[in-house]
Every structure is written in C-alpha cells, then in structure tokens.
Figure: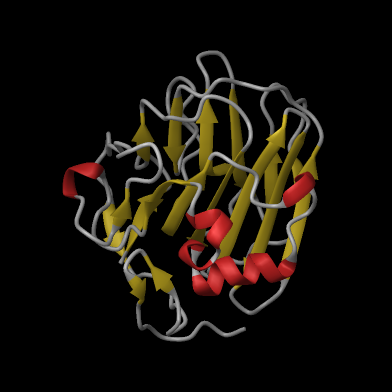
Length: 242
C-alpha cells in the first residue's frame, strides 16, 4: 500500500515538526499520475512567513528554495512511473535533489539560492505555508526524514548511496538509520491516527504526528527488492527493474 493523493485537496500535515534548523534530508518513492503544468509538491518545509519545497514542475523535477527567486528544474518525469526521490538542504544556499527512475537512470539538481528558515510545519503532497496549494497527484511511499545531510560535505549525492537507499531502504545505511527523525512506510498507516507497528518509526526525537486534513486514500506500494530492510529487518517483495 501507499498513500494516493488526488492532486486537488489531499495531503499529510505535521504541525509541530522537531526540525529547528538546517540541515535535513528526506527520501521517498513517488509515482506521479500526470505531468500536467504546475507545481506538484512532494515535501514542503514551511515557516510562518516562507517555505521550502521539492516539487515536480510539469515534465521536469524542480527545487524551490526558501526566499529563492526561481525554481531550478532538471531531468524528466514520465507519468505512471515510480521514482525514488531524495531531497537535501545542507545550508541556506545549498539545496540538492537526486532522483532514481525505476528503470535505473539517475538525475541530480542543485539550487544555490535561498535563505535559512525555522520550520513550523511539514507537508507531504502539498504546499502548506498558508492555504494549501500545489497538491501532488499520485502515490507516495517509504517516506523518511533526518535532521542531517546524509552526504558528507554537502556534495552531490553519490549514485551508489541513492541506489542503496532506494533498493535496500534507510535502515540499511547506518548513518541514515541512526539519524532518522521520522519513517513512515505508508503501507497501512497513512496518518498518525491509524499508526500500526512496523509501518512507522518515531525516530530519535520521539513520535511525530501526521494528520490528514482531507482524508487520504491507500494505493499500491512500489515493488521492493527481497532484501529491502524495514524497521524490523528484511521484508520480501517483488523486484524493481534496475
């Protein structure tokens, strides 16, 4: 299962995140239903006055930094295809994104614009700085978040680490596992009100509360390698083409 968002009103909201400053990193599998024009947010990190978001823009990926003047776009997006997305913000002017296509191709982007913010809300699948906008249209699964930059030195993420996280999961990488703030597989537990064991991990700062202001639906989970490591160890599944 995964969370499936309708592109018009559904999203997940964390109104009291433990993130207080940079850096941070996140990862998840996404499957966009369409590549229509507009901004379709995967993760939004919002302060009272500004926001920072990784989003899909029309047929390309995009990075929108806080107080930035433009979206940095890169790569291509194909409707109906699964992608593994990692976003990182290591400094006020160093925001990076890495994407792995289910067929094996990788793409990387960087924005050097922006400024630092103090997060007050997190949104999965929408921009949430004020009235929710830019809703994601598709599936999101295997979401995790750290309060660290998972790539030393703020450099471009290596393809080896990108593939390891996608195919083996965040629990297979010690320096990611030990710094997890949150992990939600979104297999069964969509919002925190339905949390079930093994579907989420509270992380180093305790349980994070995610609500669904508009009820969300469940859909198919991405196919994972048989050696994919969940919180309690490996979980069997089908194989993603490499």
